[in-house]
Image (cartoon, rainbow, N blue to C red; front, side, top):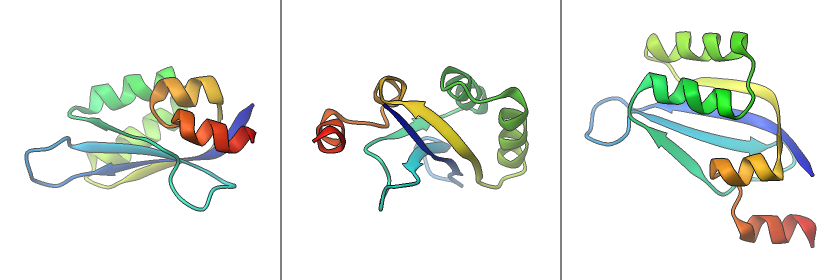
Length: 100
């Protein structure tokens, strides 16, 4: 099964936590899907987006926005349940709800 949605990347300003927070929200969901991934470096965000199968042009644009100090998003993303679960976006509880 696949889910279409949007990936949001928020940049944290200041603090000692992770600088980037990545979430995936399916279009048919009322709230964020299960997980949030946090990264300290822009390069880690780039690699994570590659693993998700995001195209190079979309990654480049998202990184440009992040480097400028803004948040970024990538719309019309299609993730299989396997990829979403491996990425930490889909917990087994969410999977059971979506199947049942």
